Amino acid sequence: MSKLTAEQRHNERMKRTKAIVDKRIAEAQQQQGVFILLTGNGKGKSSSAFGMVARSLGHGQKIGVVQFIKGRMETGEQNFFEQQPQVDFHVMGDGFTWETQDYKKDKASAQVAWMVAKKMLQDESYDLIIMDEMTYMFKYDYLDLDEIIETIKERPKMQNIIITGRGAKKQLKQAADTVSVIMDEKHAFKAGIKAQKGIEW
Image (cartoon, rainbow, N blue to C red; front, side, top):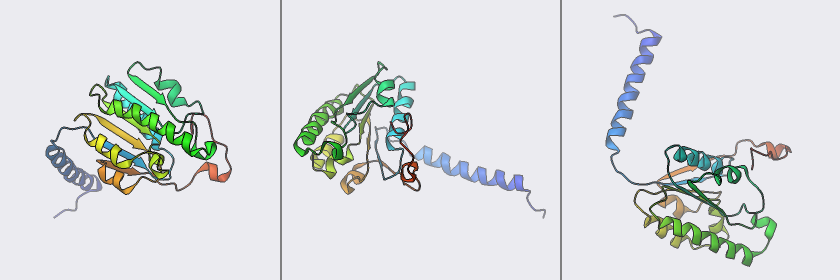
């Protein structure tokens, strides 16, 4: 019996892989929106979320964006996406919490931002909702996590949502359909390289 060539072995592996993937696709028949949580200390959580905003726009979908703590700096994503007629873009924060150092003011801003997001979560015309940097609102006890999770569960069936931010609470991870933890293996900032326009903001 002759040995298989490298090309034949590769083809056999690909056939087995395809069979497994096709089976999983066939089994995934449930139709509903998903809740995606992007967390971890690595760079790219918001960038990933806004990549999905671009993808959704390519399908003509309506998107709502609420940024919770990026209110003091002009960002590239805001400059671009708020020009798109299918995107409702809201920057609700007063800056990073370590800059404001004002608990009452930050909590009040968080509540205002949540009211905007909550209204979107009750509106089935929104296909995708991004709640950017929202995890910090629970770390500092600005928002009631139980209320947010309950509102997410009660949203329109086909609505997709994404929450980003470091240090996501266990309850939030449990409630999400997809959780991606982005790790920080190496970062230019730690080597003393200044943050770059178009990369960090």
